[in-house]
Image (cartoon, rainbow, N blue to C red; front, side, top):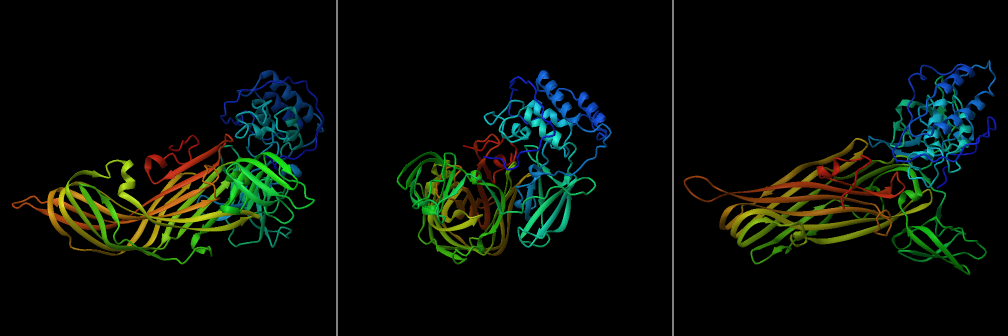
Length: 616
């Protein structure tokens, strides 16, 4: 992936040093050299003060002392080219290498839709806001590392100021060329289109940015009024402007993306799990190269990485492996209420439960004599993905209403004692899929097709424990509204919502012809809403957001204590919630990574901790 942030810089002087090829050890741990208190009392006012700060700069941990001494010598040669009497002042970043190219849509930690961008100040390798002699330390720590180094993506690449894929002596040039460039904040501007004119709407300070795992600051802005286009302009501490950003886009798309089916480009023939066949229009050269990402909408959609390519006439066969979303969508935010999508069918569904057998063994039988569930499968989803921080916000909520549950269940047992289902392996027996239906549709982000499957699965089941025999008939009629159920994951962890308003609960009087000890039996229905992106069910090639609402009623018998023996019976209705957010994306170690969030405390408490390992 070519880093658009790294463009060629003008030289402040050509310096040739005989540095030996010394490889610094890479543990993969991010080590940002913090400013030395002895050097941070003030910015250098003259070249002589800058040279004195450089001379006092110690060799950072992890750097080779001999290499670092030569790096200091190289930067000294650059600074000595400044006029001795010149007064040095901080200035906002300027030049083509300081053009912010990742101004995209975004969703902040509060769920607000707006824009996001990342800090850029070429030569500021320690991300403290200013290009200074201290940025030399990051070159020393990462010297001679390249794109094959294990810590390239999360550390070393940020010291590759000239963008040649290797940390070397040449990365001194951005420090010299941008010496004392400083970002004090940003001016946020809006316009009627990408060509402007742009008008200032607000300003934000450098400290409002959120440092991510890589050390880079991510900035969010929520516009008070919508606009067709946005741009941001870096400001120095005095408010003087620097180089304006590129206009905003919905998503930042990788340059390796190849969209199938566009006019004048490759057309779809077929695909399977490891192969895509394309047909080229007459006279058109094949634009696909190894490493490119092929995206198309046919047969549920596909997202594949080209590995090997052969061509016979106009037919191109591409051998592939699964790609992941962040191979294409480098950065952006998306917030959507699924009831707003026109392809979603009518809102309310009623499914009959009559005659559903929940359990049938020699010891225990449970059957729904009559019943129905009526529900509105509405969902509110949002995700923010950042090129340098990964997933920073994820929301999955089922909300709205109504949700109505009517059920009469007949329980009979010859002699049941214990818990059911007794083990997780028995869950399919005590719970089964009543029905399922799927609706497919296509959305577009920057002309890239995103195929989505909205899938509803409805399960019905029974659970309980105790000791009883005989026959029991229990009924409940309940309704719920004002639903807000699911979870929100952000930089602080996960918030679990289980909010609803019971609008009706009408338990009927049970019929009992049996006995035993105390028991509790729950009949439930579990409608699930799944949102899946792209057709291949391959880890990394699909997202899965599952929201579960479980209306239920519990029939309990408690053995009475007193002069007479017998049972006290109760029937209660309720609504439980659980959610499953499975999100596949690229990890900081450049490997596909799955993060799993569930409404189970021991699984979700790790949240966004970088070493979180999802359950198998």
